[in-house]
Length: 160
Image: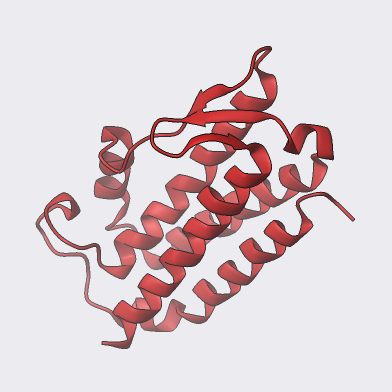
């Protein structure tokens, strides 16, 4: 079994949950005119964030794997301008495009995670607020856990 198989399964379950929310998301109102930086995100903005965070965190994983020294500085804050601007830009995309991006990015992340061995999963990164973490911890908490939290958030918002 691949070292990160449990985390990959969590990512797949999260994707399946998001897919089950698709009809409700399609029927939800469009994103408000005001930018999401000043308020809670609506479901469409949360999905846009999930779409942008998957390749972002894959890049951070690759940075940790490629570095000759450890721990490798990684991560960003919730106020990261590129993160916010990407959600600003993509929140008005058609739902079909947001889901197409989710499928593409998630499959790419899953394929890569399943390639990693125990030695690679033990590589260490250094986050500004979370401190030192192994790559396995990063995948568990910052990738799988983060998406699970957003699934819960979307499910709650779309029930209203």
